[in-house]
Length: 601
Image 1 (spheres, rainbow, N blue to C red):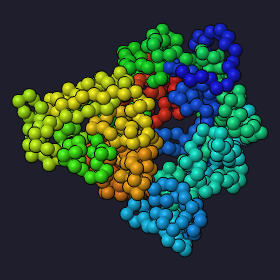
Image 2 (image 1 turned 45 degrees about the horizontal axis):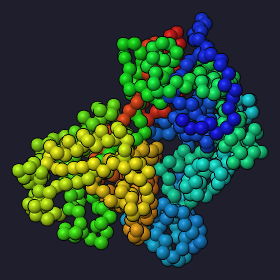
Image 3 (image 1 turned 30 degrees about the vertical axis):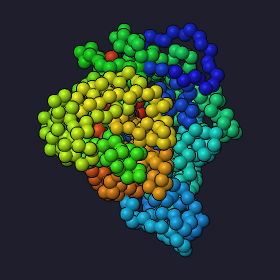
Image 4 (image 1 turned 180 degrees about the horizontal axis):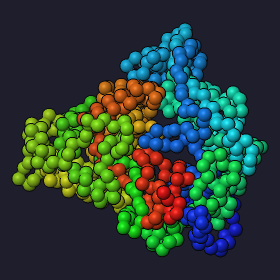
């Protein structure tokens, strides 16, 4: 559990109030979570517990539906615009690799209208036209903070200034790519990106407001530990914090100044129950709603409401397509056999792996790619190879790997290995017990295809160290097993050719800080992904580019997606609202619709 970053409320022994009822319905809702947040300040704690409480304190600024951010604080949905602007030597721009640079001869940039990497050019001198994006955000009239003070554009500008401070742990890359963020009037903010930064998420580049009238005189570094900011932040949403009992609960009551539809409950209690007795806490009536952080793995539909909620990560088996040892060229006599350079080999190995069985053991769904399973950007016509050991073995035979008397395949005509060489690989994995169990199943599946595999287990900090000696990020593995997080932006960038970690900065644009650890490179994929990364999400070309990249990925398989774990949210039997969850929705963003008993339709 994270240490509380501020002074704690007196740990009084006030018991959690029993749910009472009136003719209008229940007065309180007890929401149970696995752990206590360290802070509710928006720049201090991004844990699921802190985010859950903040959903009740704030309304938006955006809500997520079907993986798309929809503005809720604004007169209308923000609509970014792109215009060509003139840049000259010395101007700050975003280059073709996403870096902020002062324009100088030799810089690789995208001229106006250029989306994929194939049209980028090297700047030499003089003037150049580049695309620049801007978005205007107009707040709804009548928005007020919970103390009755009007909420204005200056509160968002103040938040941007706090986020820009070096002491604040915030997304400095986004700030560096911002040309200006200014309040045009009391209700209007305009964001302008640097030339060359055509941001797919430009419609959501609005900084979460902070109350300038209460926090404005405080240095950014002090806000990280300020009692009010951390434990009773002022919001504008349906509820306000009234009490925080350390180690026990956070109590909220209705915000009388809330401009939206009031919550159905007069009081919310967020209870910290750990992960050991979450089911008992629900069946005993202590909890009305149990969030995923409490660790439930299943629910009884006969006695409770429930829903499976996708977690924010996907487990993958990474093929070492181009290990570091190939940097000076592949030598069949000196290097590891080129097992995975051919997509046909990767497909055959994928057919050996029982992804459904792995997913079931993890309380998960089989992952489809770097996209969440219900992503609207997945190509419906593309799918991963099905588990089919017979087809896999036939393919391996055809590729020149023949099974010998000991059951191990050996090369007879495979060009990437010496004649008679055994198909023998190492699987790198952390020492996490769950991942080790998955690794064991992968080994058993590979053995059914005549592949001899062994496990190399290392502590996570060693496995994922940076630099040429690192197992994963140094590209010193045959196979690797680990998880990537899902992000708000579809993550085709994980497999860009320029993101292969390495020492040659001409080909590895991020040096040993690169993340495409398989070493796989594909020009068509790079072009599609770059188009997506340099197109507004509202443009139809964005969805098409994402689907094209996804299709190439599933055909080429630089990694085999294994499982997308899910967790369980559950509630009392007469609860309503969970059945309306949609893909990509944040669980408590519409807390006003939740109810039970007489509060349900």
